[in-house]
Length: 499
Image 1 (tube, rainbow, N blue to C red):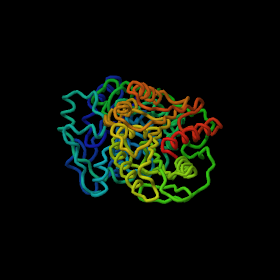
Image 2 (image 1 turned 90 degrees about the vertical axis):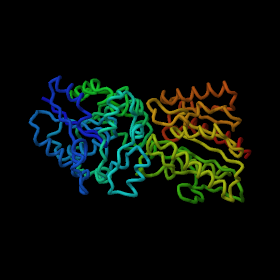
Image 3 (image 1 turned 120 degrees about the vertical axis):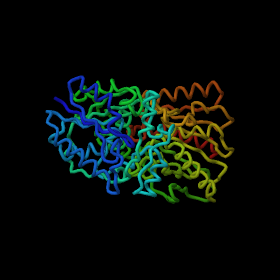
Image 4 (image 1 turned 90 degrees about the horizontal axis):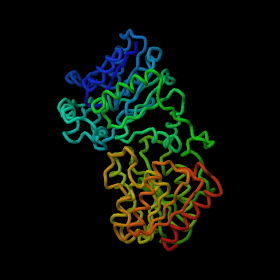
């Protein structure tokens, strides 16, 4: 018999699993919905020492007391941290880990780094020992989509929410590596921005942690609901949990690009000499030879990216390459690390970009009346504000293989970040859009919608095509075609800058 140990996200307890647990038991399995110290009906038991380690020890003790043949540990949101910790200590007893709408943590990670609400991340940084208050009524979507939750269940979620002990979020996860080979299933909630398609995109072009998802031990399911499937789709969740325990699920395969390294660690396709680079806060300026002032191109990365990702975007070969390339062409190349760490961070990233632009325009070596903004990938939604209300000094908006609207399931991204809605609505700058011919369909759809809207509204858009290029072709496709496309795109932007 299979026993499912069910651990929920922040502010909640075992009660959220009631209906899913009942379905599992009706199917012949055992189910153990868990309320850990300081959560659910055990909220009064929290003390100054309650932390992640407390919860790991409790789960380990629970696993020790289960006599069923197979133990499947299920973690939702924060709940995956103690689940992985307990699995690490009882790897020989755990048959599978199941993550519900949550990325698997690594050793040394603290759950605070994956908190989707930026205000709470700031609160934890300022007051690391203070319990975190639950969201106010109506604000739960800041922690994940509430799509599909019946009104009565949502009211109960708000009513029974308990403060989260700070130590559970700030203590780093300590692992020995014993559970590193355990079978793992990811249950992705499409209405919260998670999907199998997005995993495949991340594996193909993302940081190294995503490549592990191609290992045979990983399987994936996708549910068309929000972040709380145990409340919005308990029957479907129970069915998927049973299938996960049986080893079913979608297998993600490695991209056939011939690269063993993650794409963001590959070299830039142009060999450019290192030139003068100045760092001011989150902004780097790549300076050309000769006297100024010169026009500037601000290169804007996508995300979300992990807070501890190294190298950061501006120190990656990709943006060093673009910054140096701009400088070699006689303009100031600007790169920055904006804080798009979660889907809810687009407003913060937009503010970071606006501040970076003002800093650059104020520099005496920069011609503040000739600025271009160049967006990449999921940085594309940040172009919406600039297309809606373009300043006179913005001479060009460029975008490479961009998302011109939030991707499928990104309902938590504010509606303001939709370039497809703002292009052509104001007398703005021309757009240079570079398309990858072998792009992932979810990106292609947003680009085609953008081009249709631009044509209908009479916007000035030049399209540069890389017919045989993939997403991030400057790294994964270092071909003569790709080099020609990069050069053509740069020339098009420089022409709009009047340089």
